Structure formats: C-alpha cells, structure tokens
Image (cartoon, rainbow, N blue to C red; front, side, top):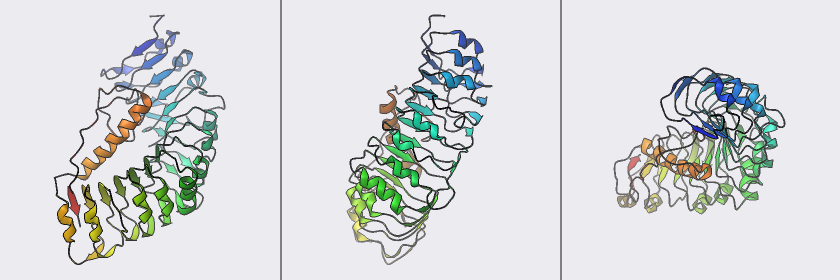
Length: 385
C-alpha cells in the first residue's frame, strides 16, 4: 500500500470515519471518498499527503472544521468537500500561499461562515469556485478579476451583501475574464441598482462565453439594463424576486441562444418583444393591458407563466400555434440542470455514472451524473395566465 497512487472509494455506502492511517500513503495523488455515509471530522493526518493532487470528500456527513494541515497541500489541483456538515472559518484561514496549483474548489452545502477572503486572488489558475450555499457574509472581494481562467463562480444562497448600492461593485473586476460561463449570485442580500455594474460587465466583454446569470432573490431595483442583450450566448437568465421595474429590454432578442427567462416577482409593467424562448416566467409583476400577441411567434415556447398580473381581454389567437405537451416547472429545472451538468462535466472531465442531486452541487466530489433526457420542444407545455 505504501506505493499506492490512486484510491477511489466513492459511492460505496461506506460508514464510519475516515481512517487517519490514510496519512501514511505518502505517494498518494488521488483520494476519493465522496458519496458515502462517512461521519466525524476530516483527519489532520491527510495533511501529510504532500503528493496529493485530487481530494474528494463531498456528499458525506463530515462535521467539524477543516484541519489547518490541509492548507499545506501545495500540489492540490481539485479539492471538493461539498455537501457535508463542515463549519468554521475555512476560507478566512486561507493564507497567502495556500493551494497555489488549485483549479477547482467546491465547499458548497456546508455551514462555513465569515467573509470571502481577498487571498482567493492568489490562486491564479482557479477555474471553478463553488461557495454556496453556506453562511458567508460581507462583501465579495473586488480583486477576483485577476482569476483569468475562472469559468464558474457560484455564490448562491449565502448572506453576502448589505442590501445597499455598491454591493455588486465586484462585477467590475470580472470584466476582463473572457472565459466565464456561469455567474450565480442568487439568494443573497445584494442591493442597489443593477444598471451600472451589469453595463460594465456586458460592454467590456462582448465576446464573453457566459451561459447562465442568476441574480434572483436579492434586493436589486431600478430598470433591467438593455446591455443585457450584449450577452449573446446567454441561455438562462434569472432576475426573479427583486424590485425591478419598467419594461423587459427588447435587446434580449439579441440573446439568440436564450432558452429560459425568469423574471417573476418584480414590478415590471411591459413584456416587450421576445422571441426564441423555451420558457418565460413573468408572473407576479405589474403587467397589464392585453396579452401580447407576439408571444405566439415563440414557436419553441414550452412553458409560459404570466399569472397574477392585470391582463385584460382575450387570449391571443396566435397562441393556437403553441401546441401543449404536459410538462411541469420541475421538468424545467431538470432541463436547466441538465444543461449546467453537461457544462460542468466538460470542465471537470469526469465520467457519467451516477446521478447528481442538485444544481448547486457543482463540485461535490468526483463529478459524475446522468444526463437527463431532453423534454419535448416545439410546443407550449404549460401556460399559466
């Protein structure tokens, strides 16, 4: 065993604790114990594995804090402890030279607290950073823009921001990262007007590869900026549960790959002209007048929710072309997740042999998953008016 290089024990229904004797495997480079039923703490002895490049402990019931000895694993490339019961100041305790080779860091679905440290910018090759859900607070550092290889930034479901203007100033630092695919800042306390920050993001990186942008369940207000239309490769946009008002920008028609647009629970008063959408959710706004007949031109529309507004008149005859096939909102979430999972698997180069449970688990261990079958397209499946 002293010459062992790879040890994969993931997905085997293992119970008990992680043996401290694993620290004796001095040549070990890859260790996976993800997706089991392990309990107890992360052994301090794992910090002796100086050759370790990949460490996957996600989807267990581990508790306690991350031992300081792990900070000295300078060869780590991928580190995943997602979906456990770990707590403490893991991020805040990261020193300047921690994990210099790290490419992917996943600590979501734990109970980590305090702030996101500026020292994350000292990991120059970071590609995937999955920090939510947790209990992180404070402001997001404005120096993340130095992470030129960053593709996935997930901060969802924390307590970030103060509900005031300036909370999203950190977006300005991301304008030079052309590799971004996912930005998820949903379910936080970000406040202020979105216009200036998103203009900088979408104007300075016109060639951005951004596929998903989520700012839902925050405290944002003002108008939805027309510059969102510059994000031409965007396929999922969620700005729901904020205080946005005015019209939905017609510039979103420039997002030719847009499939899912979620804007419910705001104060929007005009749908605007939209095309090419699979799913449109604008319920619980201040929309009024007649239902736009132009929506009937969205021939690939599969899910339409415009409930709890103040529409009047008849359902447009153009809706006849939207032939329904039974489908639920849960199906849409699975469809969205299927797309996200496909992107993650490309990034992590992992095989697909077991189901991943949730969209937030972007790096839960050795990412494996089943690509869910596509759902019917070319017809409106569910229509809530």
